[in-house]
Length: 368
Image (cartoon, rainbow, N blue to C red; front, side, top):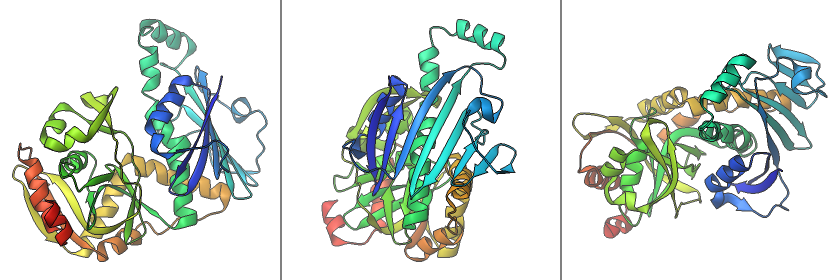
């Protein structure tokens, strides 16, 4: 039995249908702040179909009614306003059928769950892991959510609303947003949660944000933190609500009850790095813009998004924005810093002094 939910994310409405109750529950938990009435007119209609077994090997086997006229890539079939993608980058067990008609994007994702290549080996692995199958299935949910929700929604916000994606976190203050940029695993999430130790601060996102060159919008997901990160974050961790989920690298999943969902003017950009000794220095706009672009290239979520965007563009006839110039424009409009962060029990104090202390505004200083 399928379940349907509708979400509105920064003005884009997506209706999502799933045949898998556990995935539907996961989606509802992850996207609860954006849920709206199911009768809302949808800009995107997405569905996830779950198949136990190895992926289909031909287009006819995958989508029997597929019609196409040309193939710009070995695994991408295109027709008028439609496309079929049978090899999704490094997530090869997912097939997508895409249509773009009268401004609405329809997307069907068909996921094939298998534990080994070959029917015999797959059966053996299922028997071997029979007590863990539900857990193994659930490990696919976060990536699937990207393909049936975040990727199509962020593509639409980019192509129709002119917003750009950054691999960065952001925290709202009374004087604007501080953007925490950097490579994957550099400590952005821990620093963002440490900033939440100040009551005047609210989280926009810890992993992805949208911007128009002057303002940022959050792209919130569940936060993933291990025990050490929670300890370093200090009092800010008290604002986290555990979901009970355990992810890779011994990280638990959390949500923040009081997310900031409105656009915020950017007060400053901070490029986060791990270090032996904590320190901060100012950067010029050129270096900051280059670092923002580099972080996007290094982040697998943004790389996957860029590849899928090209496929959606091929179906819809849209074109991508300048992904090099946009971070430069943001950096040129604000102040920019490099912040090196050591693993220290005084991280919350460092965040208050070195991050919030560099944001102008008497309102914030009074709140601190």
